[in-house]
Length: 135
Image (cartoon, rainbow, N blue to C red):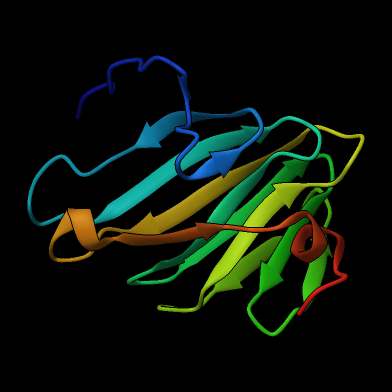
């Protein structure tokens, strides 16, 4: 057994996030036989990800604030503290904080065989998509 080293909070890159979003890595693989990644992600009001998908899917457990999740068909789901959203492998989606509130979630996912292929990033979402006015 060992205590994992503390890691610094990292601000997520503007190529993949709009607004201020920070991540604290909680757990990452210690060797090639492991795939689990767990992170605490905090979004400033109105901050959001770009469109993306995960090779092995993802669980997002909201711990504070109100989260918004969108899919390519225009569906937007609001998720509240204590609720967990599952996104299946390959499903393009975005996540964000609702306007006027910070949001925090715990992200749980598995790396792909090639860790660089775990998340496939696409274009930024538009304000219309975030607000549910465009499908």
